[in-house]
Image (tube, rainbow, N blue to C red):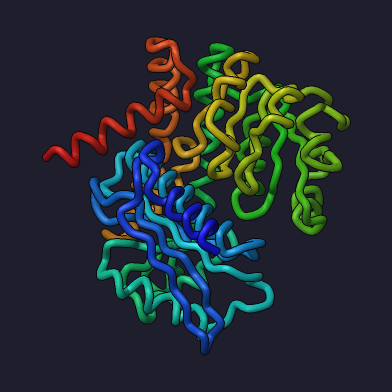
Length: 364
């Protein structure tokens, strides 16, 4: 047990991740709640990030995911120009089996106990209806329904932002900000992915999808029979489907999609997707660059959702949020330009810009 604890503490405090300000382990025996709230930074303002509800194999895996996701939110919020730091929460367990009103209320009380240092929202396994329940005991809750003063589903603007990142990638690589005639593979067509497919089809792209859930695939193909289907992610990225080699690969499921197994067999020239933490480990960004694959940093292009939930705190206006999310196009182009200027991968360029903004805030 000592080794496990040492491992978690090392992950928490190691300097190469920049450290985390606070990690809260939450347990409510009556409801069965086990959760981790991680606050990476409040340099730019209260930490903002969603609540992931997932059946982690171990508690250690849950802690590690919360830490990684919270750090990613610091960078995402900084690059989105928000006055928020980064935080994330994970609830351990299968939401289909253990999610109850009692559990969500218990979770909300833990978030409220932080006094506004962390603002929560939806993520994998949590939905607008869940945030409505949490908000009953916690004022620092976003992603609520319009009926309860919220902005509703943030997946809409997340997909819009990813689409803007794709347009910027096309502009940078091919000189034209359109996906018309390009083959785009979308891995994961759930919350965000199915909205992204809509944007791609409207822009004239050829689309192929895959998802571990057959019902998610059917929802897309029933609405758009012209969309092709790959049997799994491996077939998608290798071109083992009717549309062949990809121009753009969009990971829109869980993290770690870009790893030592997937990068060498990618057929795409661009990677731009909604999933968080797509790079499985440091060095993958260089592997992509060495293969000539343009990587649009995940936390930059998928910031549309957090832009939306942040706006909810000040009185939500969809058109105002959409205008902010549209700027992801310009931000992505600026990152590609910085990467070229500094001779580094785009992921490293984005990190430098975000770290500079956080450092300047800490110095004020």
